[in-house]
Each structure stands twice: as C-alpha cells, then as structure tokens.
Image (cartoon, rainbow, N blue to C red; front, top):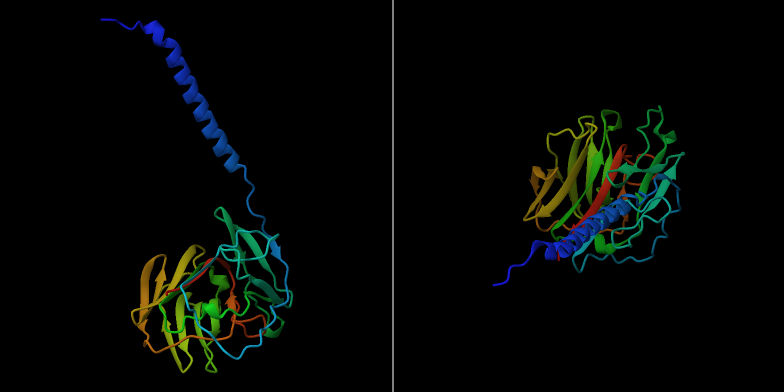
Length: 277
C-alpha cells in the first residue's frame, strides 16, 4: 500500500485556505458596499395641486384582489407612489402647512405639522397626502384590511386626527377610516355604509406614547376588528350588506386640506389597503 506523504498535500491545503480567505474577504467587501448605499433623502415635500377630478357619475368597486402599500422610502426627489410604482399621492397644504420625510428605521416616514394651538382653526397650518380617484379601492362588501404605523405624543392629540381614509361618514357617501381621536389617544377603525350606520371598533388603549405602533383594521366574517401591534384589541359586528363605494380619493393625514379636516399630527409610515377577491 502507498502512504501519502503529508508534505505532498501541503500545496493543496494552502490553496484551499487562500480560497476561503478570499471568499470571506469578498463577503465582507460586499457587505461593506451594501452598508455604504446612501439612505433615501428626507426633507420637506413641496405642495402640489390636487389631481383633476374625473367626470364619471358611475362609481365602481374592486373587481379583483387589491394590495396597495406606501413605505415613503423614495425620498423627496421622487413622486410618492405605492410599492408597485403606481397610485401616486400628492401633498396638499394650506396656511403654510408642510409635510416632511424623516428617518424611520432604514427608510423614511411622513411627519405632519405640529398640533396647532391658535385660537382660530381657520389660520392653522394644514397638510395631507391625497391620491386620485381610484374606484378599485372601493371594497363594496368584500373583506378587507387597511392600516398604518403611527408615532404620536400627548402633544399631538386632538378631538380629530385621521390617519387613513377613503370617503366620508355623512351624506350617504360611505367610508372606511383609521383614526386616533380624542385626548385619550385611542385608535379606532370606522366603517360607514352608503345607507348610513357608523360601525366603530375602539380599544381602551393609548398609543400616543412617543413610540411606533402598527394599527390594522380588518373587516371579515361579519366583524370589524382593530389590531394594535399585531394583537386584536376591539371588534364590532358589521352586517354583510354594508357596502363601501365612493368617488373620493385615498387620503392620509386628514379628510382634506381645508378647515375642519381632522388634521393628524405626528408621523405616519407603512400605509396599506388590501381588498380580498
């Protein structure tokens, strides 16, 4: 039998060790390069005119599953679009109100104007994000989820602070909405059908504590459920006949830029709407 002398295998071992060192070096270099990628650029979002209103008396509803998500990580140099690059949102403002993109984790979030303390709300700075009319975001009677992450403090609270909404609760328009209302800092989910009737799921829970909270509203199996940080906290029964369909755009941070808009104060991130097929 032949015995392999150890010194004959030495060159191969050295080559293998050198290869492992180079591979490790390449891995560290790739990781270092990834860490050097500049973060998205924050700053003030310039106000823009609203989208033109399409003239169409017919109001449609979603005919296929819909999943829309806004991370706001594109920076101020790009239009605000959803994860698929569509459904643009525009900043609308009055009285010098401004929206800012601020660091949040590895990305950005939208910071809204500070809570106004002027004696007359008429003179308060206001600013929201508003999309174009999109009837595919009308769920009708379909199951759906919608929500956002928010950061609020006690100074951000008011009688009205709308986070995400489509439609209105009066005039037979219909609506789905997420809000943090009242001085108690309670989040709540609201659904209003075209024939009236307001359904609200509101937990006895304060989210205005200076920390980020994930808020989710789910309509499914005859109930509207409010979840906070992934945990169901409150629910209310919603009849299956309650339909939501309106010609209003998706709005984030208020029901419009005009006076009495239930202006949000604080920061918002990761807005989403999901409608089942």
